Image (cartoon, rainbow, N blue to C red; front, side, top):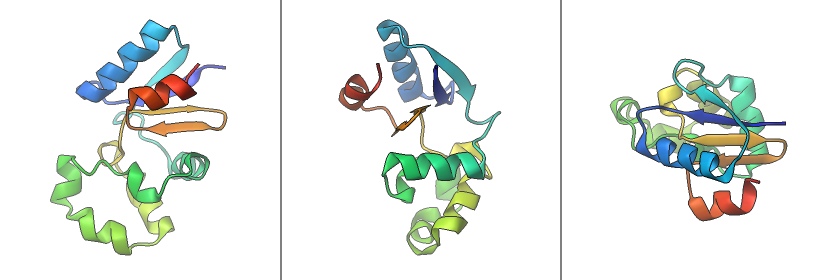
Length: 118
């Protein structure tokens, strides 16, 4: 089974991650995060499998996050509200994301990917 790789093509970190996967010969399905935004159900599943706090799924450096003044809302809103919000726009979601079975990595940290992605 292939990995699912969610990316934004104009994101330099996503390009680095994609190059890493290609150089390692990792089989993956590429999915544009804006055109095919993650569903609420997908986000909930990935969030639970990742073991990360929900706020780690937000693209905090993104323009949309800043325009919507989400810094405080993310701290105060319920998990359910945050999942709903994330599902509204792929630009709110931190990227890249790679998913396979029980592996869910958010953001590209080469050392972490080296250990987890085979």
